[in-house]
Length: 291
Image (cartoon, rainbow, N blue to C red; front, side, top):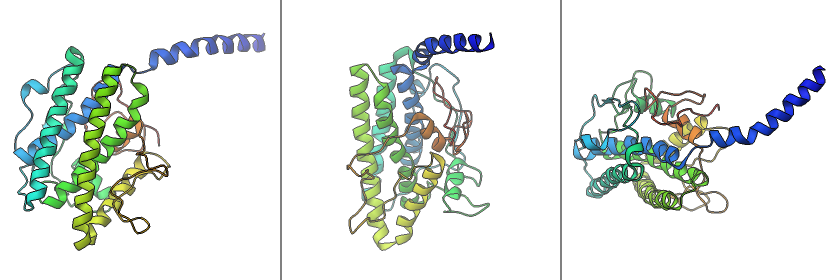
């Protein structure tokens, strides 16, 4: 009787499994709300670092829990390199437009901006990320607002992850309108990442510690998002630059939402908050992967 009951249960579970999987699959709105969390993070950081302002109040409301942004120590960067200043203004404008665009796609389904940590202190998310990469020691702070180079390293941290996040989400999107929108944003994130990587590489020729810093950040991201060593800094490979972090087929790699949250939460475990999102992201996709 026990064997028979087990067999019946197995058949019932097998019958229900496709239904359960279908119910659990994220909708296009779920995927874009997940992306909106990342766009909030980027746009808020760049707005403060480049323009010294926050996002408009009309662009941060929505469903879920609206959070406060910890901007202690954050300020407008005093750029010394005119090119970096111009690039910063462009990327900040693009990311603010991304927030507005994604919100317009989601209409009343758009999530509110969650709590963010973009502060400067020994325990801030930026400092935890830099310390895990070995860039600073115990009790020290990483200040992304202090210099052109620090701003670019923060950009490198965010934009590379954004590229892999949008590529990874492509298989989850079914609506052609949403898919085209994701492709368009992915392309812009790729441009941003390539300019940041190129500039860091150029500056690193004169100051090799900058290139070493990108490799350290890359290794730290790899330590969070699973066993595969896919992430890449900008150190040259086989006598060529490595502006494009591509696989053996010359294609950008993907991250799942769980892997993206490993990096955003600065935690390789399955958790629902931490790092740059102290209270977690808003929406239905909230948990990092168990790595």
